[in-house]
Figure 1 (cartoon, rainbow, N blue to C red):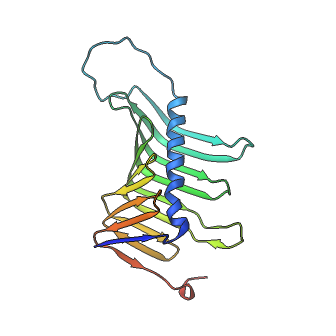
Figure 2: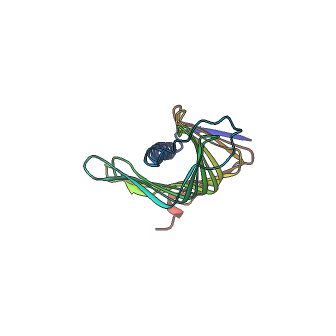
Figure 3: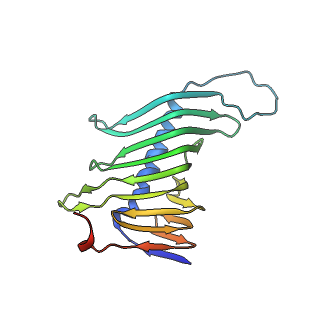
Length: 206
């Protein structure tokens, strides 16, 4: 079974965009701020060994006027030169948009390539946009994606998962065996055993 819909919720479609931006920015700054180790060129078979690591680190970025834009926290980060990948354990990411809306991403493990164009969140992966109030004073529901695997293509602005995923909006819930999200075309496709529960507003808890 395949389920595809447009604009299920305008904010639902923009939620992964926050993640794409902050992951690309965070991994870029991690690479910029870590030391570059220069070694003599030797013709040897490359080994999958890290050339630097960081433990119990926290990285914050700020806007020009001092407002916190994002924060990345990790238990350990390791860079592997043979694959030019950065691996982060126990990653936690917070991101604020221009209106101060908070989005968070957590996972047991994250892997990103050298230019941060692809980021994999592995193990209890979760992306959440907190409930907020828009400029018109209207309440916006909390929105979330969760699963054991989320693959984020930052340049293409796509989110994929070949494993079961769950989407939540307050009490509403959708589950599926896989996910394809295209931010540019604002299309989300859920495949496999797709199930949805929509709770009428009159039945929601106050």
